[in-house]
Image (cartoon, rainbow, N blue to C red; front, side, top):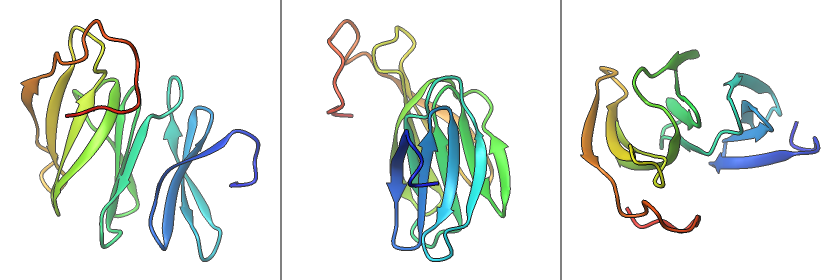
Length: 135
C-alpha cells in the first residue's frame, strides 16, 4: 500500500498510520503491514488523527469518518473537513473549508457522537490558499 503511486500519509503513530491513495483512505498497521480500507472520498481526504491509545481515529475530507471498535461511522453534519485538532481523549475539533462562506469549527465527542458547532470561522475568507492555518 505505502509503495503504491500516489500514496500520501495523513497521520502516523508508532503502531499505525492513516494514508490515502487518491480518493481512498486506509488504516495501516505498521508492524503487520495489514491495511484496512476506511472509505472513499469525493476528492482526496485532507486530514486525519489517531488518538493516543489507538482506540479510535478520524479521517476528514468531503465527509468525516470516525473509526471506532472496527466500525466506520460517517459523522452527520460535517462536510468539507479541512483540519482536525485534538482537545481531549473524547473530543476533537474540526475546521471546515476555511475559504468557504460557511467555514466553521465543530466539536465531536467520539463517545456520544454528539457534534456541535463551536463558532463560525471567517479568518481566511477571501484569502489565498495556504497549508499554514492559525485556528
